[in-house]
Length: 145
Image 1 (cartoon, rainbow, N blue to C red):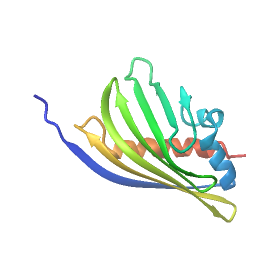
Image 2 (spheres, helix red, strand yellow):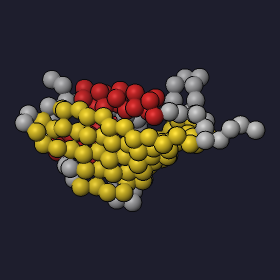
Image 3 (cartoon, rainbow, N blue to C red):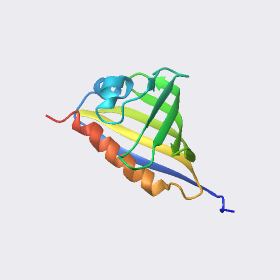
């Protein structure tokens, strides 16, 4: 029998973008905009209680399934969602994420906080934080130039 365990962790990633909070919020709240820096959602119901769902992965790699529920949305200021992440049908984590958008001189400070439970060594907070950093860097490319 495989050993079962849970690792709990919180991480925070901050970015400042040369774009208004309204523009950054739009990149999260519009499925076409979000597909440019995250993934193309199969379900995208951006409202409190709404669901976002996508599945995919690299060629010959595992299929990752992201299944989220929006818990709080304050336009241009805050998005809070809970989500599960599965790899080839195995649940690897459950998280709550808070995205804060703060107007600063010349743009928006984004504070991304994730509190997660990572299961049985299938994923780690360090790997997730690294992936989140790459994701937020991709988001930033939308606002360049």
